[in-house]
Amino acid sequence: MTAVLVLFAVGIALVAIEVIVPGGLLGLVGGLCLVAGVATSFHQFGATGGMIATGVALFIGAVTIYLEFVILPKTALAKKFTMAATVTGRTQPELAERDAVVGREGVALTRLAPSGMVEVAGARYEAFCQSGLAEAGARVKVLELDNFRLIVTQIKETL
Image (cartoon, rainbow, N blue to C red; front, side, top):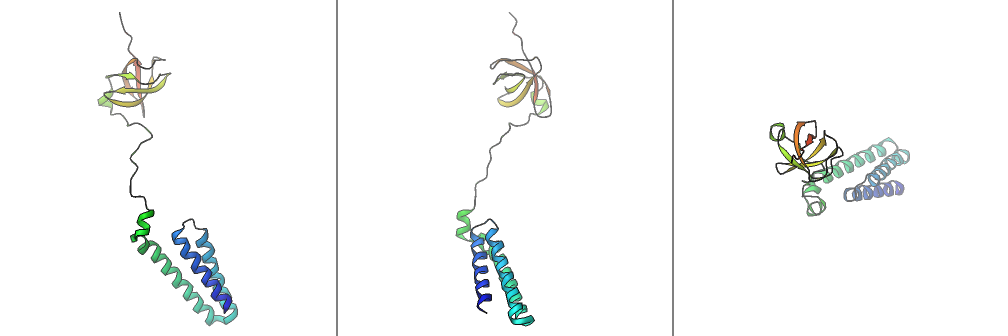
């Protein structure tokens, strides 16, 4: 009887800690302790004792799941550990609208050798310079829009 109670107590404690400390390992070990407690109960007390232990283990599992997914998210503790802000940053510049950029002039923000960044109508875009190399600050004209970048050519200054 003592072994069953110890296994159940350790299982309940580990599952309860798993609710606060996520990761899965403590919950897995706690669940295994509950299963070991059920198996020990079947071995020591026969079918009736094993079925009672199984019912208790299932009840503990159901209560734990209910607490973790229904009650805990509404508590102040969960709100303290939950991220409420959203990330609005982007790793890539906005995609260009064909009608808004094709035929317009812009400025090379970085060296286009042949790819780099350009500014057209106040927005930054990734670009490919069809005429080869264009230095930063060079005036460029948008010829076409590829899948994710502008196709540009350097505007040659005439004297």
